[in-house]
Amino acid sequence: MAGIMIRNIRLINPESHTDEIVDILISKGEVTAVDLHSKSTIREIQADMVINGRGLIAAPGLVDVHVHFRDPGFIHKEDIHTGAMAAAKGGFTSVVMMGNTKPAPDNEQDLKSVLNKAEGEDIHIYSVGTVTKGLEGKELTDATALKAAGAVGLSDDGKPVLDEALVKEAFMKAKELDIPVSLHEEDPDFIEDNGINKGYVSKKLGIGGADRSAEIFMVKRDLKLALETGARIDIQHISTKEAVDLVRKYKELGADVHAEATPHHFSLTEEAVLKYGSDAKMNPPLRTEEDRMAIIEGLKDGTIDMIATDHAPHTKEEKGMPITEAPSGITGLETSLALGITTLVDKGYLNMMQLIERMSTTPAAVFNINAGSIKMGSPADIVIFDPEEEWIVGDFVSKSCNSPFVNWRLKGRVKYTICGGEVVYKDETIV
Image 1: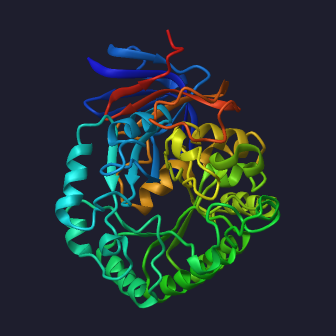
Image 2: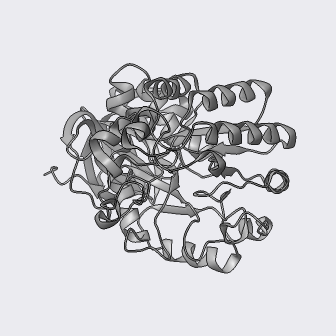
């Protein structure tokens, strides 16, 4: 007897460009058969669980290469277990944790400690190792040892690495090890008050804000280094039209460069700060409508090839502080897919295949993760969702609810998340 039979479901599988109504059989943690529903030879096979997929979409489990689970050091905001539950609810079966924890995973022992803790969770949890020791930007970590201990990439996310010679050395090592370097591109010399774009809104609030040059300057530097060294790099949470144009240019020149867009950067502009206060305070900040549309255009043409949440939970008390003192960030795992459907697919900017490619297949490929496809023999990591169902944002399973999207009506609801052949999330409305 097989484990799970999914019948009569629309399969979106970017790797094979499949968009068909199929039956899917899962057994022993793997996809064991995918048959066209109209010609299915597996439909009558007995299974422990049968899912009627009529009206639903099955896609490779989502892959988020940029999350903060705050563990160790800041577990009052989130921990690995609550982060994993939030991911599963959002349709994610694989996530990559960033290293701005305390201690940071800048050595084998601390990296293994956090990965060992993550092993017991229902989804696949990976981690970067840090680029520099203690996230201080002064001395490189032992990247070879970190990769051997399980790091899928390197990142000092939360902090830029300002020393150009150090960045170049890190790129060369990452190229040798065939791992990506994810980069937080904000030069503090251009920032008076972080998290708020320097412009109309910052002036209205009477604060200095973060100038767009903070991102542009560093993106330009790192793209040149990537082209020079051949390193695979990931420009994180891209926010400016100039940075999008630079990534497009360097991709055309042959650089192995990738870029992430967050759902908040393609859904909101700086004016959200006036409405939602510190819940719309981000690093890098929300910017102008022109920037938002440039990000969407980058997602359309593949310049930006990944969507990542930058899931950054904070407590209500922290977010309730004055805007110049409140921390930046948004809890994003539980709203990401629906924002992609509502903002991008429903408005005709992307089709569903492109959305899933940017949320699963490409992130998995960039970080060498065995995910992002549904085919015979692939891991049974699958998200099943209703692309038409509307719901109101709220009731987070994350420890935190710092989001400007609370009470928004979004389209697209996760019904099941299957990881390793087991149902790890089921929508509570399903009988």
